Image 1: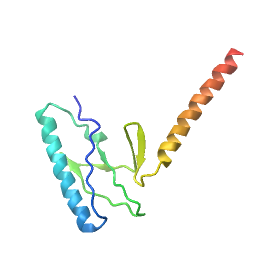
Image 2 (image 1 turned 60 degrees about the vertical axis):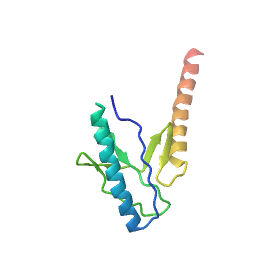
Image 3 (image 1 turned 180 degrees about the horizontal axis):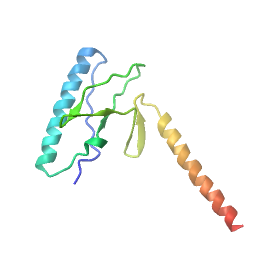
Amino acid sequence: MFVDNIVIWPSAKNNNKQQRTVEKTMNHSLEVLNAWATENNMINKKSKTMYQFFSLRHNNTDFSLKTDDQMLQKSASTKYLGVLINNKLNWADHINKTGEKTNKRLALTKASKSNVG
């Protein structure tokens, strides 16, 4: 079994002191999650584990988060429950991806109609 689709969502004011507190809280939460997963024979695919920081600021903070001594990669956009969420909390990535899927399906439909007639 896999530890999958788990979201840990802390929040803080956007200043250095608060961000360090979030970093400590997140690292502690990751330790607790790993201990729970180990006790319950669950596998955490560390290569797929990422973090995302939401902010409207131009500079997006980097955190030093790790699980089992492996640093987590930062993601600018993450799919959660079928919706792409980017770090600016706007719909741009989701709309673009949905448009790409729609265009591919439309092209398949057009191709199949031209093969029939």
